Length: 354
Image (tube, rainbow, N blue to C red; front, side, top):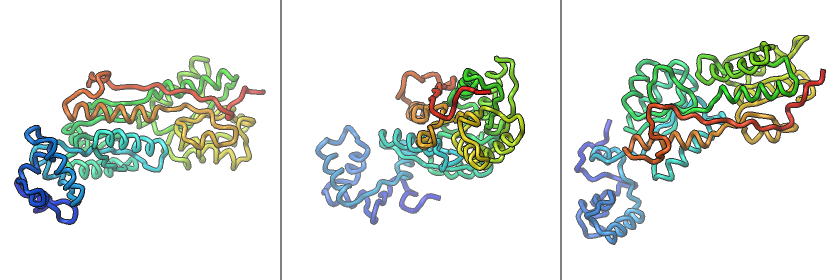
């Protein structure tokens, strides 16, 4: 519901401490129309007057009303970002990168967290759309509700990291299949034959692609996985899975993990079992949070271009929402944009010794 101050597009928009455009106009002895045009950077207003208005705005603490600006036909300065988890280092980095990219263009971030729940995803999206944002960047849940998909089709949207099959909007993703292939091939080149994989749920596009990469690498060598566990990308899932995998007689000699959170859980399980890496098992993680370098010997991992995908998704969205071309390299709106990961070698992997 719009407040009384913005229900009429012609009404003065109130800012901080009740300061209005009319207050600024009175202080400068100009019309409120002149102030409005100056704030809108109208070419009809001199640079000297614009400077005086900006100075008065700062001194009086005036805060423009976004809703009033939208009702007058202005463009929104807000962009929604919908992610599954803000405590996850990967998504925290995504949020920071998107916020920085928007700030560079004098725009602002609306952050929503879904906890990978489709009902919550719908509620969060509705709340964002009430602000009439310029667009939405979303990491979709495994099965978005039909209403969620319909809402996203009516606002400029870019999918990030994951791809929802029933959502037709463009996506900016990482080549997860290639990333996990590199991890498994590294262990195979070190002579490991019994490899296990712990990854995210296959209902997610990322989970399916990472599992496929693992299976591709082993199939190429005529091998089958020693063990595979797919589930929630949380440390507790990996702790349980790795504890089971490493408690058998013919246990894996190499572990490939499908996320940083799963890597954390795997290492916790190995510690609890009094197993060391790489002496007892070689470990390859996914993503590269700062603590990977601080773990004993460092964690060999597949580094993901997080800042690149976040800034690109922002650029693509704004290019479409604002009707210009901020990045001519990505003009094709029908094609997904894919980034390649990189294998980083550290001390958690070593050649197999039978």
